Amino acid sequence: MSKSEADWCKKIEIWWLLRDIKKYGGYKHTTVSWGENGSRGSVSVQVSIWDDEKYARFIYTQTDNATGEKKDFDYKVPIVESPCHFGGTRHWFICTLSKNGQYCGRRVGVLYKDGDWFGCRHCYELTYSSRKVNKKYHLYPLLHTIELYDEIEKLSQKAKRQTYRGEPTKKQKKIERMYGEVFTNYKMFKIAENKLNTQTKGRNK
Image (tube, rainbow, N blue to C red; front, side):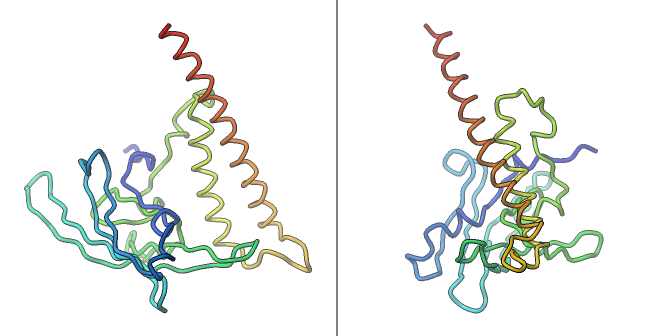
């Protein structure tokens, strides 16, 4: 059976969820929608990072396509933080799903919904579109950047320290190289996008 693609699943990125939370004193209540005017669904999210218990609380109603039965969901996903290399901290979700009877508990920056609950792409066995497209495809650099961010997350989880005897560790050096790839891929995407726009304008004349 082919895997679902993460690119097309409903998802919530923690940086987006927390982008303006400081002006609300570390707590806010928001609605996340997908599609035009929420045509693909929406969820209510209460998020708190000001107290000892940091969490994102998801509240939504889901309709079973086969039976038409409505089911209400209300649950919390823990949020933790880790130190950044250049100071400050970074926040992460903790995946609360279980697979084959084993609790996940991965620290991730993005939660996906490919079933009833929000969880990490590993539990849902999601893949990326970039693994199914030719590298000459103009969106490949952008899709590859998404993969790189996922690899950076995994390496950051494994890295116990960022420096050793005043020098970056091997894992940290690899993370920094991958951030360089992210920047390069983004520039490649912008170049391809500008080229595509120019070609499109030429055809319309």
